[in-house]
Image 1 (cartoon, rainbow, N blue to C red):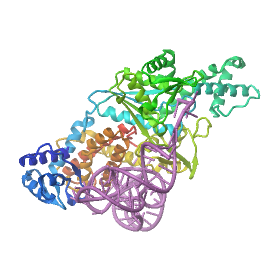
Image 2: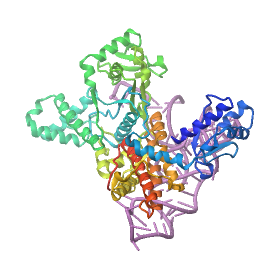
Image 3: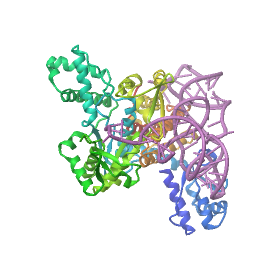
Length: 539
RNA sequence: GCGCCCGUAGCUCAGCGGACAGAGCGCUGCCCUGCGGAGGCAGAAGCCAGAGGUUCAAAUCCUCUCGGGCGCACCA
């Protein structure tokens, strides 16, 4: 890495003036006259050395091995600017071609086990656009951790127990009865969606009128299976698959929830009041205590959630990441504190919150409620703008940012989606390689000295920055950092492509540029793969 | 009322302690007989919500104010 090359030289220079273990910040510069990389160490050393930043910089400059650089100079109030030698920069291309898929690998996870739980949508209806952000963020975070050396388990928590499932069963039952011509009204609490009419119809087709003698559980089971199948289909379109599905109902079946409840009572963190069982959340700073078991005897979602997290911790993960919408911020601390009360290491649980996508259509707000059935399904969106565009959109911004998504605009502009800009760069590369006898023409030992143009050197430095981008993306669990990186890389490639021909009259130049193109493909492909976006040969 | 996130170009958003603030879309004008124009180049467009503070250095950190979103269920 070029940055590390610079860092090492600064460390040597610092040690000559008896400074050790001082943090060195190096940044890529945004102006050519500032060189390739710059450091601000002179500022941070200014105080301890009791000298002005400029003086420190001058002193440090004397200790730098100038021979290893094209030029090193003090600039502005005390920046130290490094101009690299062409040969140093060219090393990046050789590295990328030689290592291929192994280029820029990091092993931050060291094979440790992480579980990423995402989507976990209730099986009460099709996935909406809102679920899409959860799904794509979760899947990409899993890809990132996988790329960076973690042993990743992707998991979907399936809420197939509780009150909402009864509502689902009853809703389908009502629809079924309506199909038989009975005058039954669907109630306010029920799920209103048309998709339940379809399910009711399929039940009628398959089981006939006799099904009317069955209870709501019968309708619930069929509906649940049909909806799960539909959810998996939608996710499949985005290339999302899970390693493990955990059913909420299993924690009822094996009594895990009641074991948890007993232990919480024993430890003094659960108590009875008004016929309900409460969790002493106030002990951990919450505003009020929370209900674990309703006065009806039915647990709230909280109790199985606690049992589920105990289950996760017993499965020996080193890290547990829950991908959650902003509406879950208040309740998550309860789960973590409860798990700690039960003797587990709750600090292993990391909730990753994302802000909501608000939907508009031609400027008009579109509300999303599965129960009221006025939603746009994820699958509709995928069909309208393509899976790649949906994935790109969902992770192109910080998870902390609320996003506005205009359906009409998205459909109209789907060709202008930035994802195609990145993919087009890859397509151009693939096309060039086709025209030039493909990979076989790329020689890692080729003479790269013709690559002196500033635009080309910018591109090479960006290739080198891949590892930094990946590291930052993984450390912050922020997919959008890698998205921005890929976009910048594609931009620099397009500039290069417009300005310089790969096939020229000069064979040395052609070979060198071909190597650059190949190196760019290696890196672009790696980034796109992690983002879950295809790297097409043709578009 | 309390908690969490956000207020940066007309719109959607990057930048989150460093040297004159960026991208995409939209707008204006250029560039295809040669590796794919889903592209490139140039331009217009910003008191980085406001006010204090910390720092050699603040869009970036702290405090307050004003806007917007999401929560604060015996729904999940």
